Length: 225
Ligand SMILES: Nc1ncnc2c1ncn2[C@@H]1O[C@H](COP(=O)(O)OP(=O)(O)OP(=O)(O)O)[C@@H](O)[C@H]1O
Image 1 (tube, rainbow, N blue to C red):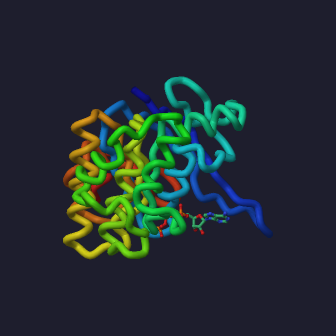
Image 2 (image 1 turned 120 degrees about the horizontal axis):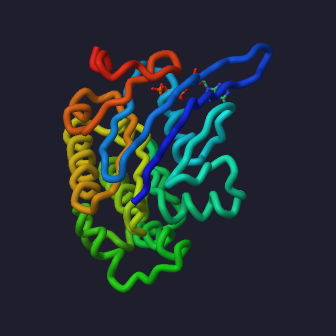
């Protein structure tokens, strides 16, 4: 299972003047942990998540997954690692609108050369959407679309799930359902879950909290402050 180590991570953007978004962020996420990332709007949470998932490259420092530094992996190896070992969930669901629900779920299977053999139907049942395989994503409610996105993130058996405000567009009931599904499935299968959220309720479910304050990691002892 994947161990994520990040060391002295920095990310800045050079416009007219340099804008530092993250600085000196270090830590380790152990296999099977549920880690929640919190912090004010604009503090750098999504930036950190994108760096951990290899969707963005750091300006300084490193991210290692099982010792492999993402920055030194060739693009093809990084793509393969993201595709096989990571699953992503976003606030806006990001289902492919021109594919049915079933085909959205088949995509990570075919990208990883895994057979379907009832896997899609099985995952739809797990997220409470049995029989919706032939529906188009836009015929589903927001909560249903996000549950498809949960299934799509997990269906190929990735070791790590990275979720960026997965409940940001949902009402409270749907938010609770999506989070308990994700938490339950990840725990049942020993997957690591790293979730950015503004929800205090989600914080209570997590094993550990990372608080980002103006681009830096707050010390653990005052993380809840
Ligand atoms: N490509 C970019 N160029 C310039 N600035 C950027 C870029 N990407 C992000 N930023 C800036 O980095 C800061 C942190 O953004 P980030 O999305 O990580 O914050 P966040 O904590 O996830 O915020 P929110 O809770 O509002 O989603 C913001 O001020 C943002 O404008």
